[in-house]
Image (cartoon, rainbow, N blue to C red; front, side, top):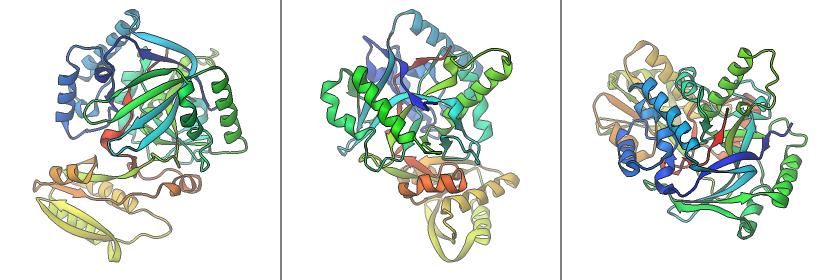
Length: 402
């Protein structure tokens, strides 16, 4: 079984790609102004924005919006908006404001080789807990959709950078597919077509990398997106028990493969924000449940004030794990809602009210990832982020899934 392989990739032609590409739907979920500005920038132009449902807007006529997204997919396909590149990989470079470059290869992952269960032993595994209630709205969008657009990022454990880094040194020989600035401070993205001999050699290197490995790829970003694709695939199989679906396009999902050890890999913490709560009562509960001597110092922000909570951890346990368990326990019996925030500045602004508490978490060391997943299963949800919010993958390429 080849877990990660070339795909039939769709890219818009004769289109303003700066208006077409929009950031992953799960970003800026507590900042609707970001999405309002995105809509203003897009205007009436063709855009991936019309094909997705931002999580910041969930609950606002979801059925109508999903129906409109499905209709837009059909319209774009019938209009000839896309050029299709058959059986191809795309080498991708994302350049950020500080000059750093994140490299990747866009292809498709076999959902038969992926499981998001905490005890999974599949070649492709989740890195964080899957929140069950986040799956149904995404399934409603994917079911009946003609297209998928990827924001999932897979990680390989390739210290010598033999899979992807080599492509960066050869890119001048590849046909360039796109090269443009991303909206709202997302940096610059470029893509090159991999086909023919180059594609064959990459497949050989991928085969060599996977040989003898039980655990090949970790889902570094877009865990719930890939989990949704898996859930839809499993449902399709249940609904057609007597059919051979082995070649059905829904068996695969587009994803970008990146190297955990690549030079552009920057990991950021994901902070916690609880709103609509009794802030003092929550902090008192956490001090009683978690505070032990001189453990990890965790800044807690509320109403413009900062307090320090000391969390003692052991046996490799992360502060995020203990905090998340305590917050989940609190929210089972008290009012309030939790959100996951990228960036200390955004957290400080959002926790400035008296009924909100923000928790500034430390970053995880990326070298800990594969051993931690192999040894103990998934990490607590939203333990780390591959870059800041504006550095997330933008929807750009697409693939037919029916």
